[in-house]
Image (cartoon, rainbow, N blue to C red; front, side):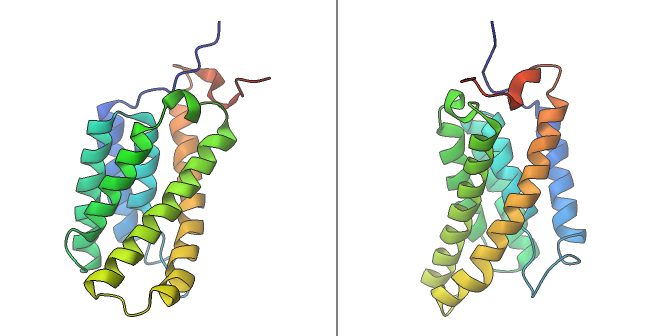
Amino acid sequence: MMNNTMPQATPVFTIVGSLISVLLQLMLAPSIAVFEVAPNFLLCFAVVNAMFTGVIRATSVGFILGLVYDLIAQGALGAMALVLTIVAYAISSLNKEAISISWTIQALFLLLSAFAGEILYAAELAVIGYDDNFWLSFGMRVIPTTIYCGLIGLIIFLIMNRLNKNKRPEILRSKFK
């Protein structure tokens, strides 16, 4: 009988992954920015972590990574913390059985949540006055950052699946064959 539940990320993996994503955001993100659009490693990890953990750990990690992002970006303190907390709560509240149906469903949830997070962040910055034009921000920041987060999140997601291979090797297989 196949066990089609999502593997649970260990606290050590969550802490190490958070530290690695912070280091990548500090060191690598500015170097690979295209037209001043850098990937948001913290959003990517918060979403992938939320898929593998419970609500409390996911929202805590989302909030902490959001505060770190706000301190790094020197923007409105608490803006990304609110966004990552909401996105992590939404993803971790989903039915884990629905997410574990197939690898493509997991990738779709990752991409949609990265898009929702970037939209929420752009809207929040427009409301509090940090960004003048929402639609310009949508075209110049939200779409490219979502694509970046989708690609980077897929890499993180594949690493997590590889590390959880011993717990559940059939994670990349569809339940409906």
